[in-house]
Image (cartoon, rainbow, N blue to C red):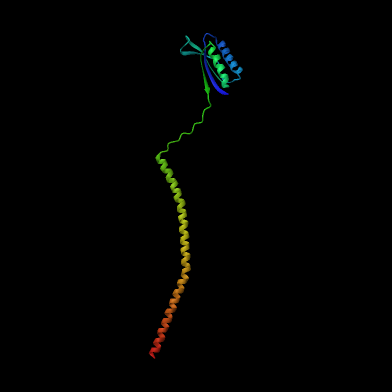
Length: 179
């Protein structure tokens, strides 16, 4: 079933009660075709902005209903044959489509700030990695030096022993030669 809106103007030759009964008659015709009335306004006397069929006023009313599209052709023919209706218009009321949200225009400054923030975050992450890497390297170097120091001491002690032996040899040679 589709939703329709019927707006119509009834002739001013009728009284307000007769216009009301005409509205009820239209509602009953729609309901007889298995239609469902959603909204109905009482006919209100209005002055027209221009004359229709030599009438300067009329009873204005709006009727909203649901009905099958096949039955709508019969309703249209009934409205066109009714000589008490000066004018009518039928609108198909489609449900409102959801529109995509419009993209907002971002100012270049905002883009630069966003990029700068992202870069700073990445640099901070990288800086943490670099600091960890440097700490590891320093630790490895200090452990290597500590391991090498005892060997260096051994070399020094060996050199000093050699020097001591050479000095001892020199003394002994001096002693032998001096004799």
